[in-house]
Image (cartoon, rainbow, N blue to C red):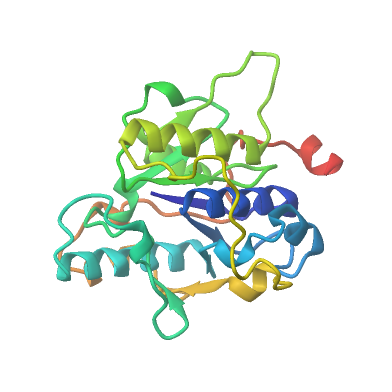
Amino acid sequence: MDVLLVNPEIPHNTGCAARLAAATGVALHLVEPLGFSLEDRYLKRAGLDYWPMVELVVHASWEACVAHFEVGRADASGSGHGEVGGDAAGAEAKGGHATSATPSTRPFLERLRLFTARGGEPLFDVDFAADDILCFGAESKGLPAGLLEGLADQRVYVPVRSEVRSLNLANVVALSLYTAMARAGVAMPDGDGTYVPHPERSRDLFAADVAQRGTGADGVGSADVAHGADGAGTKSGAVRVDSGQRGQGAHGTPSERGSA
């Protein structure tokens, strides 16, 4: 299972997601442009001293993100990973680039669970799979409308009262990840509450120090990727995303951004 934040704007929220990634062993993916620098002190503070434990993968664009996961799918097919999920601890850097933390032979878009504050299947009713990618949009804008419309049956909604516009992004990511892991049967961290400091916790690391670049080359269109991995068209190229076109309802609002 992977967590994917598309164009996050608030460093505190992404830092909290990084801390969650460290706690669960799940990879955190960020799609640029970001609303902050990876050397932002508020980002670093929210992640505390857990940055050495974070598998952080940064993608230059949505197209590069799609290409990254499709490269991982081809690698999983070639290495015999037939089961969904795989070994999350088996990800490793290759030539300064990252591999997907969860080997999977499923097309990228089939793995997506799109979180939005404006409808979808309630979080607690979703049958998650071990290789799902939990995808969240920018705090003030949400995920692109084209993506939400093209994959309407993969939208996920966290129930709130009608008087509340949305929830804080970091809260939704934490709630959704643990819920998805439990419902998919993904093994939870084996800690019993005893704290054992990571051997590299004393290093003064920023997110920029641990970030890896995704394997997908920027500018590779999703339609090209759809035919590049196995020579046949797949659902991975079925949805076009315009970064300037946003859907309503991220879990986070302009008012949240202003108070951060």
